[in-house]
Length: 116
Image 1 (tube, helix red, strand yellow):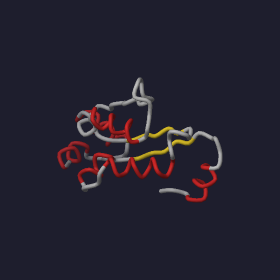
Image 2 (cartoon, helix red, strand yellow; image 1 turned 60 degrees about the vertical axis):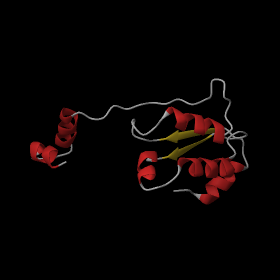
Image 3 (cartoon, helix red, strand yellow; image 1 turned 180 degrees about the horizontal axis):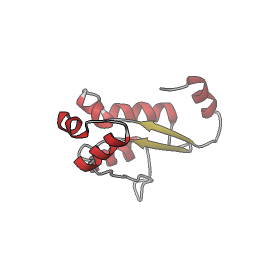
Image 4 (cartoon, helix red, strand yellow; image 1 turned 90 degrees about the horizontal axis):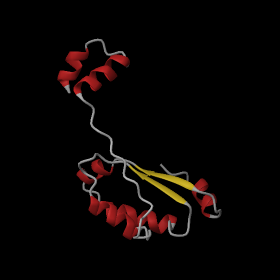
């Protein structure tokens, strides 16, 4: 969700901004194209001239080295040592899932885990 007025105010400043593009993997499954999203972002924000931090979220097995190269190219980032850092989160184990369920008040943790 974008607050259009806040976005316009930010564009007139030299302030740093953080943008989140969530669920890249789910968007792909729904037929959305990462290149189109990044091109639109680049047109709207002009990251080459603005102080921008972009955070994208995706499952590990969906984000590829080609995606990183695409990001660098479309956002006109420097190709030598681009300011991109990929952080990978490991999937939850079954024990992690059960612990999370229990800490969130699920009474029948084993049945819950079996159902998903």
